[in-house]
Image (spheres, rainbow, N blue to C red):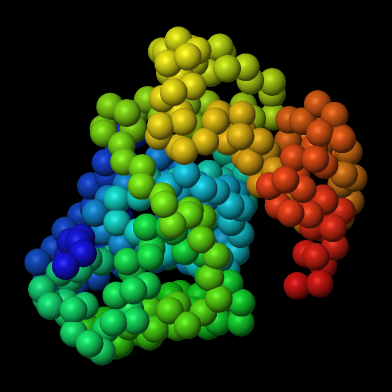
Length: 301
């Protein structure tokens, strides 16, 4: 057995700390959730249910486990049980004239269809997909649009048709091209107190990454000494704070590089780097290509 819980249609409650509580029902195996508003819920949280999410509208940074990537319309993610995650929208979504967001998610657990459903031989491939979801899956390739379209249909489906479509989504996801946000050795857990402290650090960083942030400065946000903070952050993210900050800036640069009118230099300073050469060096280190090469690859998709 591998584990999680049963749900019905509803919305996640707006908590400001982890863990997250999901509304439950004894009458339905799946929770279908439609999130619409000026921006997505951006506090780090986790829950024992698996989550499949399609981004219908909106863009920003998706952080899960200890990895991150930019998200935009038509992206599909599969998030494993108890993996801390958040969707942080781009800056314009936190203004009065936000373009608005929409996401559709399915929540389910191992027991949703009975104790042995995912244990039968015919479910082997789907079970392996779910077991790998602790690494957090981003669907890519030709199957992405088909999976996205099926998820978008789920709010209108009920009963048998909903279950059939759900299984089709899992089957397509198993065969689809995938990228993972976390490595095979990802194994980070958080207590509620640790999660609350990390939440403060992440929230501050997401809001101020364009500014100069020193280790002593961010350590104060966590109410820790410099050495305590460095150890705390490395223990709960698997990386140094500077590495995390650079990754966050680069992922935001990827969003801005889609705007062809912005120069590489403008993007560099907009995301918080102090000189272009360091920006290009960090971009290549994290993305495996220069900003110019990345922008060119986006035009060929």
